[in-house]
Image (cartoon, rainbow over all chains, first blue to last red; front, top):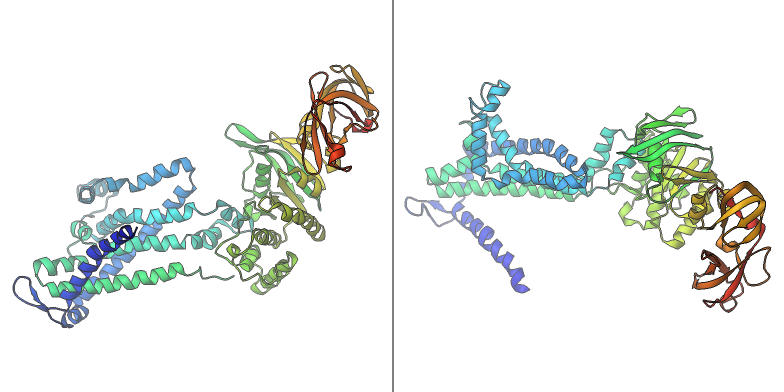
Length: 271
Length: 348
């Protein structure tokens, strides 16, 4: 029993705590020429540089914006999807959920490559819609991110909505609420924890997303994931890269922390 | 006054309601009684607006409700599961309908307090429904559906989630409450004791239609057909030939007397188990039989008697004189007798 409980602890230690410790160590280390490209020490210069240099700050802000907008789009598409699945006859719910998750059966890069084909200048979507250009634009990047992370929004929302007593909707209508007010006063507040969970599951991976912006987005799209990559592998400036990672971690911990507090709070309306 | 005419609801190829006509008076507690699948819940949901009728009309006090969505009907429902909003306080639940009507915050607060007092839950306004007992939730649900002052209140098995003793008290309370408010209640139940005890009138539903509508005494004493006689109080039913007040039981070779005459010709004789007497001074109508078994049922013994033609009669024997006096050994030959006014004559 103790061994079973120890396993996840060891797992967390190896795969979460240790890497974070290494990043922390390097973030406070001094840059150096050589292998490895740092020498142990303690300096706040790396963190200060990342905080003050507009390159990093803008990349971080832009990543926040991209992740925020993507989360919002996922919510706007995912909520009706989850609601529709939760309201269909039980016989169809599992097949529909399976359909939502079906893309995961194919490799991620394959799917993004498929999108490159679809979005290309001679691709299906450009030709059908008449838009002059899609691939290597922000639009293509958003399509890719929303497409990839939508299931993470749909599943927690579905879990929440499917457990809601349908009589609650009837009761609200019975008491005189028109459909839009039934949604605002009953369905939305009751699905709030699902919304927060789904938003966290989309927002957190989206903010550090590197592959989708690189493959579908424009050259201008300096996101924090790409900056991180370049510092590590192109510039071989590990201390700066670690400082970027640390700042990202701080932001990521702050935002979901806020989200979890929001989810735990009772819906703000007493009367 | 609620008038339903030709109301029809189909689910696929099955007719849940089949050209149903019914008039429910103002200031009446009308009970819809029926087994599962009889259409009683569908009827309630059709009046509430949650089921769209395929035909017919629903008219309440000269307003045609048939085409109105639920939120525009001056009718409220108390749901079987109560359907209290778990994210809102008790007070907000009760005030929900008032806020939808545009009643001001201050007046809503006042009326919610009054409703809480009415259902004897003063001081519970700030709690969440999840923190209340089943009986308290039931009263919150009632208060919430009454708060907007509907012209008609629909109650879907309102007592089914309560335990026996609480249910009995709540029946009387509901009846009292309805009288003091002076609005019509339409209550759905499958519990016949509940129906007989509470109703001003009962409608017994069968296969999407009304098998019979009447006061509890009318339905129990004068069932219109075999279904009602056996559904309500499980009467014994014997084939007979009716000639005025004299009823021939051809398979037994006996003729008995009824208090009221029936249509001449073949029919059915229905007899309530508790109106039959075994032993003691025989009443005017007598048949002979043999005790098959006897079961203790708390307030009485249920005795099965086989008659000469093989038919079984259920007899309910009062325990007024004690267990010893009432006991019956299987195999004992007995005389089963009854008064002429216990005879209920039904068409075949």
